[in-house]
View: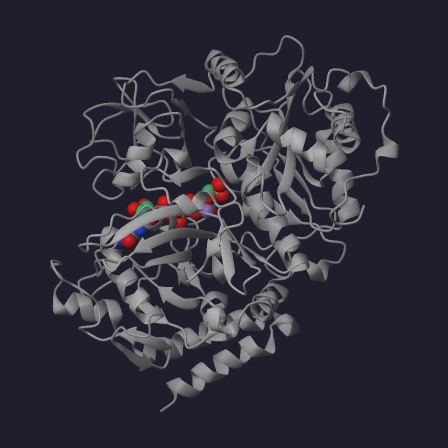
Length: 618
Ligand code: GTP
Ligand code: SPV
Ligand code: MN
């Protein structure tokens, strides 16, 4: 099958009993459903319409099954808590595969298996995988239904938890189904099973999953197959699997970018608005910045998105951005009234699903950092009694809230623009204790790509594995680039050819996490990041006090607006200073990193590290 085309309709058995009561006559969709049903052998098929009545029925069933706990506290209306299997709490990068025809096209950052071999493996594990369960068919669109080029998908899943979460995270249901048929549009076929068939009479568990997991992408045919996990990025296939891995391949072929970025609209006291996107690795501050409450007087922030951004060259030579999602799947711990009141207000409107948070005795949820004082007693995410004296955290460090984005008071009206809004600046940021200063402006587009290409961060709980090791994470996309990483950087270089050079966004490197001489994080972060954003907008206007350092432009000691902020001169120095010796060491790490790209590293980006070397050598 060619990219952008679903399988030929001729292959389907049109009289199949499987789809006799289907709400569509669209042949490629019917044959997809028939094929997967024949393979996985579910007890029944449910076509998801996305309605309120359906949502009520499904959540009732999930409560009945023990997967959901209905929250009875008035602080969390129409909301539910779910607790995963303790071994199914995060994305599984070691079990994520890009199965391109040629190994070279998956690149060194991805796991690769020959597609024919993977298809055979998956045929084995999916054979009968939905026995005893309902197979749900979820038509969805990433981005707006009335966009110029809407991007459709159909997720087949045997998890009602996935259906209720997808209803928050993407536009799903009957309208989408009709549009696919009306436009005879391509849809990404996405198949998900928890991998836990039920024999007749077998009792289900609250969180079925399988020790063996596969998160598989076929970039050429734009297919997704996910097996064995019910969790977030492994199972809500519109999110990382489609909107980043598959979409990055579509974007390469069609001349745009699919990125792991937040989108923020910032308005100055002079009433000028700026659209800023930010790529930070998982659990490194996107949701927090997307929902910032600026501490600076007269500055207003509104949000468009917190995790995924699609960037397209517009008709007018500008880059335009949209958020393809419709909800937050945010890290719960650390989200609190004192750090992220905007998120808390959205959550307080209800209609949310909480995964691996702790339960309060009055039927609500709690996590570390929600309030400054923990409650006296909780039931932790494992179902154990918890008190403030307990050694283990009450919520899993990667516990998540899933909340509709339109519950955000500070949602920007541009969120509703089907074809997006002009992008002014891009921030790349990581979690680094040393070396990387608070904010640095790139000299030009390719220098900015170099910031992104060499982005690094200490690992977090958002993926399985050890926490706290520095790893390179190009554009915060290391686990999400659906093709060769060198080709991806080349595409970033080339995509600017599509745009008006005078309208290209400015690019900045930020680090909220650098430690000071006292061993504590030097910069106060969170709302105070508005001071950095103000400097960014000043630089966009050709102002802002800066020094040129070997790594780019950084603020002078009096460059940031620090009015009303208590920060010692030492802490400020430790936040913004560039240390030549640290960068000479950093360059060794960059050399090692770039060596891994082999000859797929674009010359213009390799040249950037030579330029840095030259600038660091007195
Ligand atoms: P994903 O949803 O996994 O992609 O994560 P994210 O990038 O949206 O991360 P999020 O905003 O949820 O932040 C994750 C963690 O970083 C939380 O524990 C926050 O408390 C912490 N954090 C966010 N912003 C700041 C900041 O400015 N300073 C400091 N010190 N910590 C921050
Ligand atoms: C991330 O890990 O970057 C997330 C959460 O946003 S997940 O949906 O699980 O990918
Ligand atoms: Mn993310």
